[in-house]
Image (tube, rainbow, N blue to C red; front, top):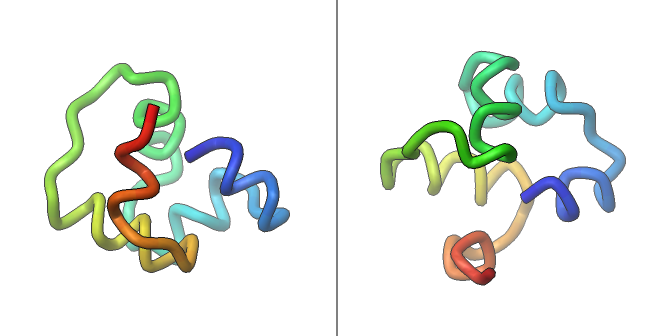
Amino acid sequence: MRRLRRADGHSQEALADLAGVHRTFVGHIERGETNISLDTLERVADALGVKVSLLLEP
């Protein structure tokens, strides 16, 4: 997710705004410190313009 976010030129805050989540939550997700719901995963994928399956790749 971090790689995709940076490739798009988005800050964590900008991605959070696009996905409708709190800015600190994006950092928690990127560091693997929290579990993410399927709904949130879909919103993040939409905000990045990618398929959910791409975010699930190692």
